Length: 156
Image (cartoon, rainbow, N blue to C red; front, side):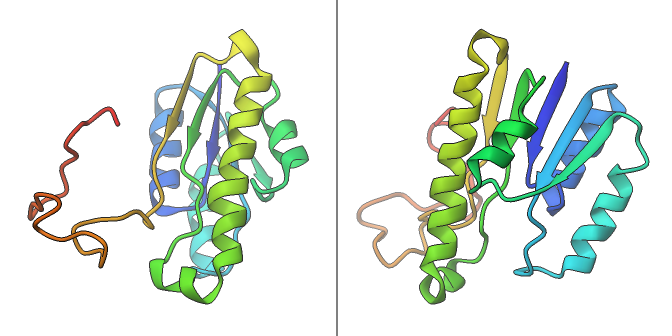
């Protein structure tokens, strides 16, 4: 049983990877190590994962379908955390968001589909670039804002 972990060098990705490894899972991590956040920090996170014999790493971009298809071989579960972060940066470089958050997400879905009945579970965590109560398109009259982030429907 092997888990594909996208965004493995991110803060959440590293911690998910460590938790999966601690319970004896085999993990294939994938991350492009882009420079939006400090690459040395991402490499330090990976250094906590790579000593585990059940961890392998693919340095690649989920926007590249061949890379994702290669990484998904032998996988029966996917934890998809990879995304281009930074809401303000999306205004400066929208193409990066299209590639990572749309094309990359579609590629992960296509890779999942290629596994057919061999895929047991897939978890997707949304990027930070989603609308919230603080969005200019949302007002207190259109949605009920809370001071703590709690989804209205936990399964959505």
